[in-house]
Amino acid sequence: MTEHRLTPADDGRTLAVGSEDVVVLELPEQAATGYQWTVEVSGAAAVHERPADDDPSAPGAGRTRVFEVRPGPGRSRVTATKARSWESAPPVERLAVELERR
Image (cartoon, rainbow, N blue to C red; front, side, top):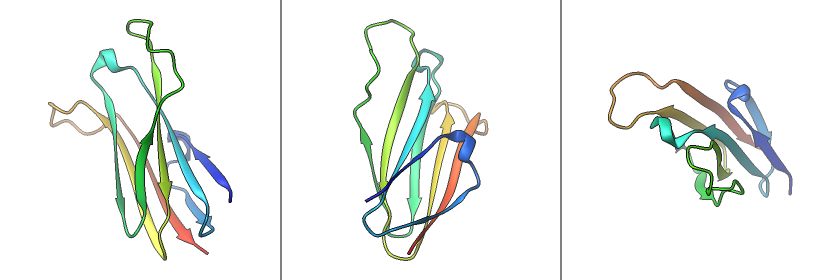
């Protein structure tokens, strides 16, 4: 099993993954601004959020949201967007990757 760690700098990548591989999205946010990450997957991939290692005790401090993606058979697309849920403006940041399972 290989763990592939991705950040917003990896936007647009295509990644070849094995059947037991895990893709980890590390997405920085500062909740006090109202911007939060959401993740959507297409294809047979499954996604869930991991608990953060950051210290939540500092008010207004930034944190890293961590999502784990387990690729399903074939090709999947993972799209993470950072936006305010109450605004209709386009996301301020995104990470979109294609996963091709070997």
